[in-house]
Image (tube, one colour):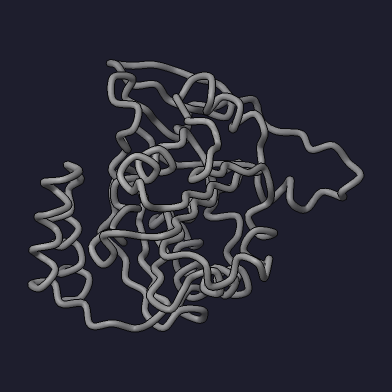
Length: 261
């Protein structure tokens, strides 16, 4: 299965404010108990197992939660790009003490999240907002407020993240507190991978990539403050994550070990 996320955020963000944005059609498919989100093509935008709506079905989405190895009780988690709401729902369920913010440009994606992907309504902890991701991260009101930031933004032809400049990643870093961590879904089989890593390393003192999954998805982990990544010391926390959430945290450790070798 091809798991190459796409969106039209970059194109729509560049349109003059006076023009009404035009979005690719939001379409659905189902196979073997899993509902998939598409933008009018065969490319998968996200997935939800119908009997487990709060579970991140795709492996790369599970890896986007790798920041949990260092933070067991975040106060505020933000997601750029809603998709099927997999990460939003997971964080909302498993961190009852946390504020969860999700930023999505396409109003149809938000609407279908409620109607077809069991996205909870906004409340005192959850805030799904319709806005441009760049506007969110450059707003000074958001700087220093996040423990974790999850970034999953692609263009209509899957050519890599649509927001990929050093300035964008600097703004992402500014949104994190001193111990904050960002995870980003990249496309390892494309020149955009090297471009994004370079931009992230300009904005963050430390960046590590997990091994590639699916058809090219690579999750990068960026730390606001450089830290010693002791894989052996993280084993206990990984076991705790597996026991509490069933996420494959032990495989994340293996990936970190391979990346640091």
